[in-house]
Image 1 (cartoon, rainbow, N blue to C red):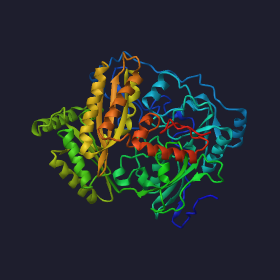
Image 2 (image 1 turned 30 degrees about the vertical axis):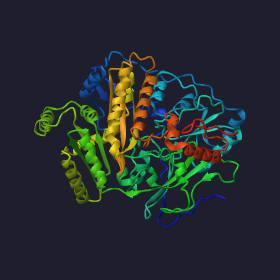
Image 3 (image 1 turned 90 degrees about the vertical axis):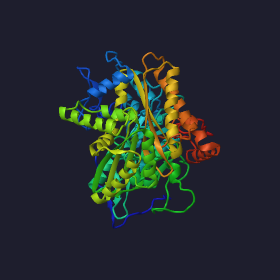
Image 4 (image 1 turned 120 degrees about the vertical axis):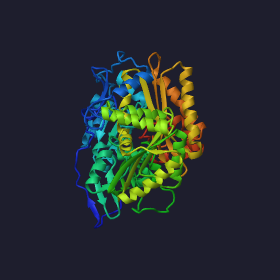
Length: 607
């Protein structure tokens, strides 16, 4: 018997939002098939050898970036005449492995499907460096054999039944923004691999304004979810860097974190109840979900937390009930310049200790401070004078060193200007005690919105001989500074040992907690002359990961484990933890339908 609870009451409104997803079935119509983001938005070198950003979607769109152009030349010694053009859309794909009997059963489901090569290819990957490099210059050895687009929970149940009957593999696929290798198809998997694309399960099923909760299907994309909620005067507040393209189900499956978590919480704080179709098809009911729709309960272990972070290995998440909040009446940005990273970090620690964080507060090191400065169009005469005055004030009057300065960006949200002003006063007073200088709203807003275009830069780099990637960790406050220094030193050492002279390693603190913070690293290196560019990069990142763990950091704060970091999983959770995960896997997925090989690649089904 189903465990579904009747939650209908007088305050609940059934949503009538039958909109088209921002990500269509033919993803390549809107998104790049071999890179990040929208087709109409990219960094490119124009005929005058100046980098510009195309399109109209972002604040820096349709603007020439001469400072960025010169920075790229200086940092990576780029020669723009050396251009590595990526391949066109492939015409030949691995043959699908689908038996006539399975195909006949799929056709009877009345669920949309595709055997087209391009549809299969764009769901064979996420956005790790290796995946994008393969898309541009090679081909995956294994891709999904068929793509299915369910529209509801019941469709997913039907698909999983068929998987069990025909011994097929199911890999759930949402926004496709994973940076952990979670969507890779296991090369040695000879069973049929079904890519279960959730993006047509994109409806908000109901909204309960009195209790401030909502229920949505998990394929809904972040920007669609927020747009629809905002029309009701609400927000989830969950805004990861990838929210334009990532899905609600993906957030749950990876234990995601958003930029405004100080106000709204991480995904585990937002979730009230999760519904997941497991692979235990021999049972009459094989959907895992809790019974009561309440804010909290004490009824043994919370099985939602088995689903959170499961990365598609235990089942397919179909619906989520989550908290919503009224839209803030007032939004304001801010920024603070500190003499160095250590001072800025101490101020961040004190803000967290006083629990007066704004919705978002992020600290960028000196490298990222300079990077933010160069991602701007050519200055007018008036703005050049103003920039010169600011520079003079910081370096001559405040005696800040230009090669040590760092900056914090802030986003305040609240119900009144007075509420925000009180929080601003407290934070700026703390910053002042660590020699911080308020740097204005425009710098804060610009720093916050630039987050959404940074991911586009890697595609430009690959064209001109630079590989790059980001990775993150969480760490206790008293170890944060040493961890950042150790990782930067280790990367420099590894690059020097390989004869790599042109590289960059930078970091920022992106989320803060009572006990520690999240640190995000960006690493890039010139790959011209390297025999195996991606392999070399991965070796250096692995060394950086070893340094992170040795310095007291976590395996991941919000990116997840996937296949990329799976070798570290036993160390992260302990052998007892691995055994517990395997017991859950064996019970919930006895046929190993969800054979993604994420988290625990050594797991072997008893079948």
